[in-house]
Image (cartoon, rainbow, N blue to C red; front, side, top):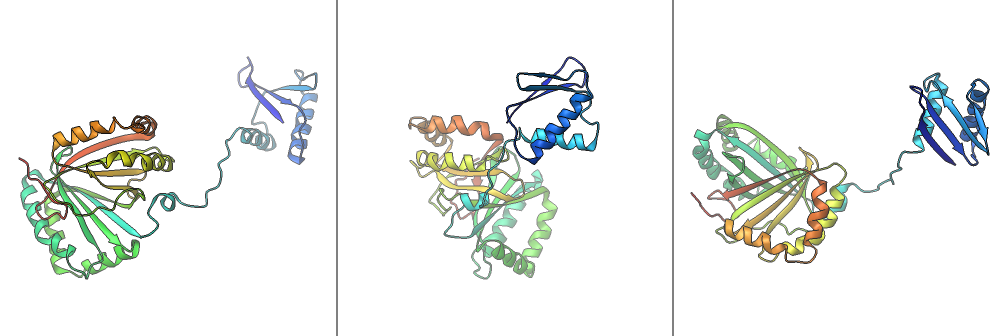
Length: 316
């Protein structure tokens, strides 16, 4: 069946041309309605097997609305059904790690006190086997959003481990005092639950001193698989200096968010390492095809706190 729609000169009118043979019960009803309309319309014309009918009101009746919807459905692209969620296709299969990233915007006058509080309490939680969670890293933003702290936690065991850790922490007097004092120092806070891309290395402690860059990408909905396909190839171009720390995508919080975490000796090393990627065949193609997938992107240069498991470089 071949259908063509075109507007006529008259306001609100459309030409509907049905070409060729139409089969099926629905098609029969459509042809019957068209035939009936032809009898009632002075403008009906039949030429060489083509039927042209001027419809003066597309909403004349509920029945006509139904047929109009059927016509529209002919032009809607069909989507193949998926049997797996994006998270199942992109995340690592051999483990059930869940990550939580926290962004705390601190009152400027409280930043030193906030850092001291975190350095006193967070390591004790990290080293206590009673809690099924690990502190991967904790930083202050150096360039980017100012007076901000970023914490990255890992929960081995997924959502059950997250729930267990939070339930146990709510019974921890030291943690409750920490939360109470922390609340007095913050302007705002937000978090996201993340999974790690299967093609990235798992974040592990590394020798310093280092600065860290967190590059965050808000992708267009529906493009996560495409992003993952390109970066599965691209990551090999960014492993020359072991700068790749971790790659994550959001599950709860801001959706279609991607975070790439990188480590560099300093800002000059960062520039040289990033420029070197362009000398690899294929890197330009990755950039060309992934940039249109991005709605918004942000870069933070971060300095680890003194007790961060990812070693630090202190800079004035």
